[in-house]
Amino acid sequence: MVATTATALLAFAVVALALPQQHAFDADLANSPPSYIQETGGIDRYDGHEVWRINWSSLSNTSRSALHNVLETAGDVWKATPEVIDVHLPPRVAAVLPSLIPKDAQATKIVPDLQALVNLSLAHPVPGLPGAYAPQSPLADPPTDFPDGGWNVSTLDTVFHDAFQPLPAIDRFLDALVNEYPETLHTFEFGQSAEGRPLRAFSAHRADGKADAPEVLIISGQHAREWVGPASAIYFLHALLVNLRENPKGTAAKVLREFTVTVVPTLNPDGLVYSREHSRMWRKNRQDVGGLICKGVDLNTNWGYEYKPSRLACSESYSGQHPFEAPETAAMANYIVNGAKDAPRNRMPRAFIDLHSYGQLFMFPYSFSCNVFPPDAENLMEAGMGVAKAIRLIGGPGYQTGQACQSTLRFSGDASDYAYAVGQIRWSYSAELRDTGTYGFMLPPFLIRPTGIDVVAGLSALALFIYDTEIEP
Ligand SMILES: [Zn+2]
Image 1 (cartoon, protein in one colour):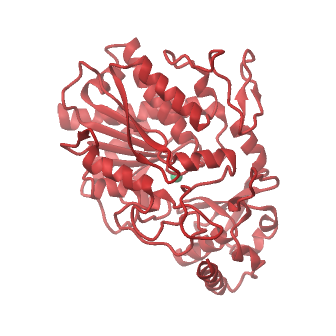
Image 2 (spheres, protein in one colour):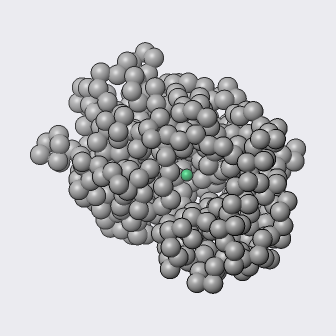
Image 3 (spheres, protein in one colour):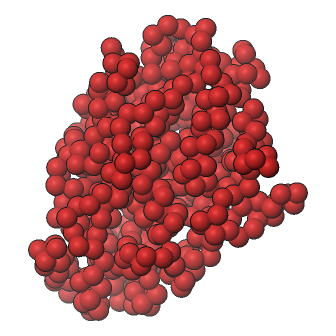
């Protein structure tokens, strides 16, 4: 831990030297993890915390990188693209932000009080009062359809999709889905999280569908605070099942005839629980990484392709010391390559989609570098544009398609890079779901369904594109 702190200070000193025109801010900000990752024993609050968007498009790559390091040390970087960087700052850092950024970068406050958005993300609809939402303790369960605590899984109108649900409720809902659609859906476990929770997958395929149908694998929840990922992955799975039953000749029926759709809604269950019960901004898993204060590996930098070890255990993008150090990524990769314990793989999945938020992006490999172009780039681009078009055609918002390295920060050890390069999954993507920054990670519950509908339209279009180009051209 001493070494980690010394390294953090050193990194900070280097950054400060690289930006001589800015005055250095309070050194103890660099000496300890920011408050949002301190364990308080209670529930972290974000009163007066702000989120700022800094337009840095006129800065050189070197200045951008230096500024990124400053903001990551002083706050919590939410998103970075070639145009802008969004950063969450505690009040005392927000107060000195203008002194931290170069003159030719413009900063705009996009969230004035983060706690208000945290409260909103936890709210649930008031039964009998359409459009009304009630505040809720993170430790309370949102309403259910039936007095016994169950949901009406035969319809998409269930109130389950009206609120962000705690993990036990998610598990109960998914079990109810398996009960309701036993011929089409089955569940299996492919490993355990760092804290011993089961890692669960849900596979859907029509009993009268094509034998040995190619698999479309969708994972979500690698980053704990991105709650809309699991929520919309579950909505997608539910919609496929309901639509298959209601319209035997529709799109869902075709998708589930030609493909096996496997959904892993919560690859980071420990992080999801922690982000609800303790720290809404939590991103990593919850494994012990040897530090005194900081825990957790950032799952989406821990995959074993172009992996780079990290030095700073407190960093939000701490990738660990070796690839697949996190049991969650190790188990997921093992499933991708070897299949399930009782169903060993005889061929690789045909498509892989890793759901994140936010930014409205549908990105293909590679993430780690723009110097390596995937051989399938044009096809991946064409299919990605089809996904964006399908979402727009049903009245959804604009999604951008492109290579991941050009759309966001470059990250090594990325899941979709691994799926493409090692898993040899031709149709590999990572998606950033809604929104573009108004709410960021704190998407309010009334946007769960619209985002779920985006995913249904987009991923159905992707499956049909693969069918049309590769299976029945
Ligand atoms: Zn993410």
